[in-house]
Length: 391
Image 1 (cartoon, rainbow, N blue to C red):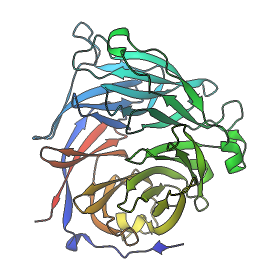
Image 2 (spheres, one colour):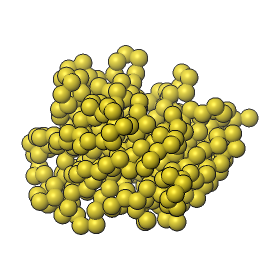
Image 3 (cartoon, rainbow, N blue to C red):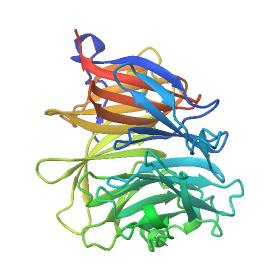
Image 4 (cartoon, rainbow, N blue to C red):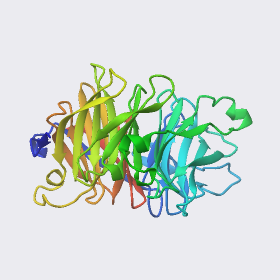
C-alpha cells in the first residue's frame, strides 16, 4: 500500500486558489445533487425534503443563480414534483433531456427513473417515468448518450437486493413530437458471483464513466470494492472487480483519460477518511488497477485535528491545461479541498475553503469567465467557487 501522509504543499506556496463567489439558496433543506444542461444553460438541483427537482439559471459573470419556471406559465409550480426522494440527476450529452432517480419511502418497492424535458419552451417538463431497481442511489450517462448506468443500493435483503442497472437510450428519437416511450431496462447479472456475496448484501452506490465511454466504475460502498462495466463490445457487461481496503466504504469515484490510453481513477473512501488514486490499464478484457497513492484527509482539512472525521463525500477530477486538478467535498467539515494531481503518486494540496453546510456534490464547469465549481450542499444551497492563479 502506498500511503502518503503529508507530502503536500501548504497554502502558502500554492499557485492556485479557490474563491467562494456566492451562495444561492435553492431549497429549504437539501440541494444534494446538481447537474448542468449546457445547451439551455439550466442548472438542476435535487430537493429531497420537498421531493422536487429545481431548475435554475446561472449568471456566471456575476455568480448569481436564479429560479426559472419548471412548467409553462399557467402553472405556478417552481419545481418538478417527484414520486419519492430524488437521489440523483444527470443530463443527456446530446439531447435536451435529463434523467432523475426517485427513491420511494417503502424500501420494498422499486424506485423510478424520470425523464425530463430541458427545452427552453416545454409543454411539460416530466416526459415519463419507469421503474428502476431497489433504492436507486446514483446514475451516469455514457458520453455517446447510448446508456445510462444506475447504482441501485438495495436495502440488505434478497427481496430488495442491490444491483447495477442499464437503460438502453439508443432509441431516443422523435420524442419531441410523440413524447417518450419506455426504454429497455435490465440489471447486470453475475454481481453476486463476482463478489461471492448474496445480492442482498451488495450495495452499489455511485457511478463514474470515463470520458471516452469505454468503461464505467461503480462504487460498492458496503462491500469495499469497485466493479467495472465494459462498453467496448457494444453490449455492456461486468468486467471484473477492484477490491479496496477493509472499511474504506467508497462514496464517490472519478475517472480521467491519460495520454497512454490508461485511466486515472480517484476514490473517495468515506469510511477510511482517505482518498486514493489508481492507474487503470484496459488493454485486456479485465481492467487492471495499480495503486499510486492513498492520502489521509483529516490533516489536510485541519492539521491541528488530525483525528477528526471530515468525511470525504465526493471527489472529481478535471484537466486544466497540462495539469490535473481534483476537488474533494468533505461533508462534516464544510470544506472543499483543491488538489494538484498532475503527479498522482504525489498529490499536492493547493487550497481548502469553507462552503455552506454539508457539501455532498461537486460539479466543475468551464464557463466564459473561467472554471467554476458548484457544490451541492445539504443545507439547501449551492456554492459557486472560482479557481484562479494566486496573486
